[in-house]
Image (cartoon, rainbow, N blue to C red; front, side, top):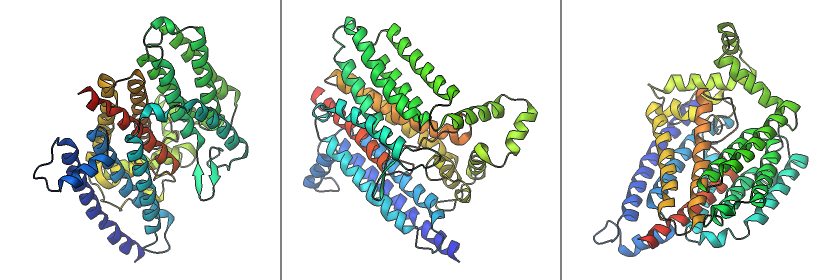
Length: 428
């Protein structure tokens, strides 16, 4: 009876999805139009909406689409935590709604500010994030075998999200000052890059190896856009790769054994002999269990989606609302939605990189490209894990997966990109 009532409740979310879609298209028309005569809304209201949603209107549409999908899928995936009554999942709906509104308000505020002024004290923020990561590692609660969080009352704060954003800003500012002359990249600049990237990646690597790889990859892309000499790039890459191998081989940190296990499992599953593959697929617990359930969820709903709120494998996937949320999306909405999400993220990457063309300052172009690349690559890592294309990691899908502080830092990143995109109007 409880499942039947809950299913009826979930069916009503279809109305929310349709309403959100209509509002998105409506806002798209408002932001795209240059004038507002004879619109479906009064000119004063149109101007007010535009003032709140500064920057590239396409980026705002991407944000609304992704957050709308994430809101509905999280409501479904988290219902497994509340089986005592049909209405209990509404507590998560309200909580997620509050976090979503807060993130959109933060995004709106930052999009209307000067990004240069907002990033003035970023090096202090980066240093503070190092201290917080160390504090979380030493004194934070252990969740999933790693101490990555700091509990502040009912809120769990992950300092690595703060460090990732701060490092991208710091590198962008550093490279922006060197664009006038390629000779400006001297040994001190190389030492600064190694220090900032090395400290950040090493500290995060101790408890979250996949995030450190994502940060290293983003730093590499920023060095390419920043026209760092190839010799310096390869020095940085060699040091970072050596550091990562050393941490894993020597068993340093909380996740070294887990990384070794996941790499071995992936190799055995993909390039091993037939006997090894059969043993890996027959294994019903450990590192392969979540992946097998994810693939079964995708297979069951790809061609015949179950519909909103009707996922069955959410009860078997321990991370159905975060690390394996892509499987939940396909199980409920089908392969069409599974292909639509990569398209939207590629759209985000295109808009983020395109800002380089009309950014008034080198900092704007570098920062926009770095932030967009980080968000999109993180999303694709989440998708690749769900289908078994890469070893299992713990990367959530930005604006889709559940999360409190991660959603807030994503909102800050998107707000900065939108603030930078305002240079287009000045350029025009």
